[in-house]
Length: 300
Ligand SMILES: Cc1ncc(COP(=O)(O)O)c(C=O)c1O
View 1 (cartoon, rainbow, N blue to C red):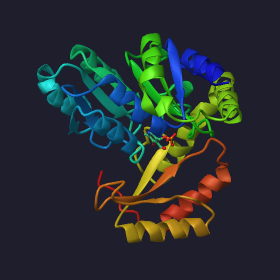
View 2 (spheres, rainbow, N blue to C red):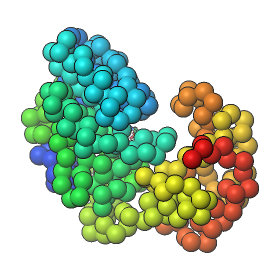
View 3 (spheres, helix red, strand yellow):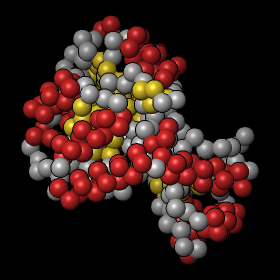
View 4 (cartoon, helix red, strand yellow):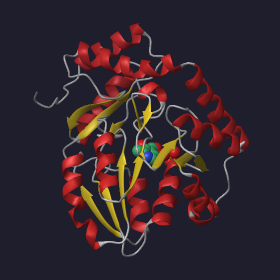
């Protein structure tokens, strides 16, 4: 079953091969130290997911962080020449802010600096670019050698994977400790991921709905169009975010308060993730419930 999923996800994303891990966390934890080590450089987007930090730290390479976007990355890569190998790791869609990375520009920069680019597309798969996520643009696969995904978001299942070249996948099969030294996923879980992937392929129109719903929500509140189906509602303090969570819960909406240390001090928020099946009447109820909250929207 795992081999069938790996073949299907690699074909879907346009890579030679893929490797299925127990989870997205285990995937990032295994991939990074398999490709870089002492004497190498890892450049992380400073907002990167905890699993990317965990993988980078266990690699014993030098780890530097940079702000989002191609400009800060280019500055961080000025030191590239001091190191043997270099790996750049970013999220395709930032999990807490919902903004989309400039993957085409970042891929060009990484190629120009002879650096591996790892895009963790946990929040792009299934909902952007007709489901293919941020490593595809206008139907074309971008030069991203390492695409990480999780089966726990749009696929509604469990597991994580790396989509990459055949050579990388073969290497990781024997080198990634979080692949080798842990039990594989149960076949029924993998079957659920595969079935979800088949739905994505057969009905790409479904993949557009989450962003459409997020866009309707933002427009109804006079906010800028979102870049992904993740829309943060900023509240500043954890107490205010928790109070807002309780108010929405009373109205029937589950939106968990995200607090430091997951996000920086002073930026506690509710994080909305719009499902494809959200009914128009529920969307209207959500808009009016959010109108009743004191959201600390940023200026502009
Ligand atoms: C960006 C990102 N990467 C990795 C993960 C970890 O994936 P998993 O839940 O499959 O371990 C998550 C969230 O769960 C995530 O948001």
